[in-house]
Image 1: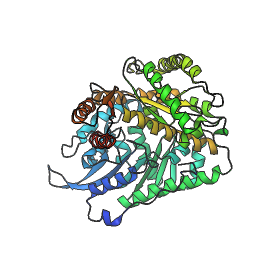
Image 2: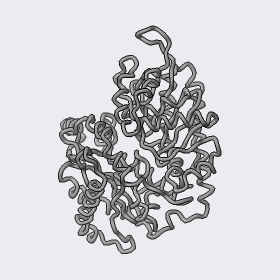
Image 3: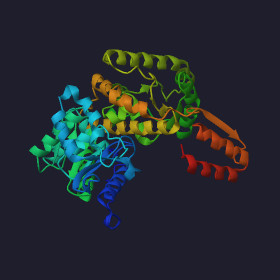
Image 4: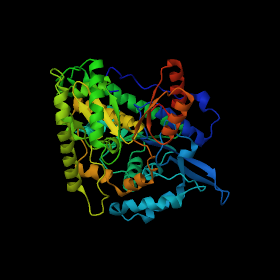
Length: 489
């Protein structure tokens, strides 16, 4: 979206007719879904929204202030009412009296369930204090590529000032949590006319007195950043200019088909993986560039990005001008082993006495000049989404490096989020993988009754299924039926 090929402004999609008659919680759902409908506003599962709503307390019958805030997990584009945590604002404010300082801030998460309103089972996220302590009725926290490009630039504070003046403030990097919530509150009280704040290496907070005002502020701020980047990028060599040219699309696909099974085999020793291939223009511009290797080595900046993609990708050495895929395959095992050694060194250098055990040391993202990007994960949807996140990271690097210098998070800061005890607890709460997760099944005669039933069972067990049949029409029908039931991934 920082690229003029796809750099159109965000549309204001707020529909007064649709919003009319909605309750405050319903307006929060509408605002969240509308923001989440455009991945330029926030990535899958990223960001959160909130509203402070006056409701009748089921215990006292009195009207009290309740924070409705996106709960842990979920996606803004599809969230419903049951995806929001609800908490008593008076109890959230009372937590300030229990706060013992930044070295103890993780313990504050344990108090959040005690603030629950109306026995809501939805767990509150670590970002809850960030929303609670902003003294505005409506708050958006988004991860737009254009804003993170500002947040990840070396002179982020000065760029924020140049683009937004005093309307949008800036706060230095701070891991999400109770302390950052207090920082936001202080900023708001010290700058009552401000409409939001850029968080260094993180994202954007905006607010308003009404849902519509908050939404329109968010869209306006992102558009300001898009417009500024387009002006400042005019005539500048993106990523240092082109180093190699892409192979044609059929050749790229042929290489992907040959290489991905080999990568999958080498990284699936302990758990099966599935892959996704992406050769969209934004990816090719990056993998073909002169700055590919130095930028990739810096790692991603936004926590939401590297939690999905690992801190950095593996760059597969390849010259598309003299394409020798056999040489790439011959080096592949060594390249993957070298990446594992590097990840082990990162873990050993940054770990604490109470850090969780090291997780899978294999790369998630594989970048290949002239060809594109491969991403691997435990299931197809996660592999695809990891790729989407790295495209977000590419857009961020594109913007920041074009107007300034791109800055990744320091290794220790990245580790302290990747292996945060609270992040580990979230991972432990995830459902266990299904029996056939990461497996690929080929069903011949897949359009027939037995074939469809077999495919249905395999999909329910978590497999990725390929259907084959000589009846094209019946095969298309079976594909549509199963895609509707289980998703296109």
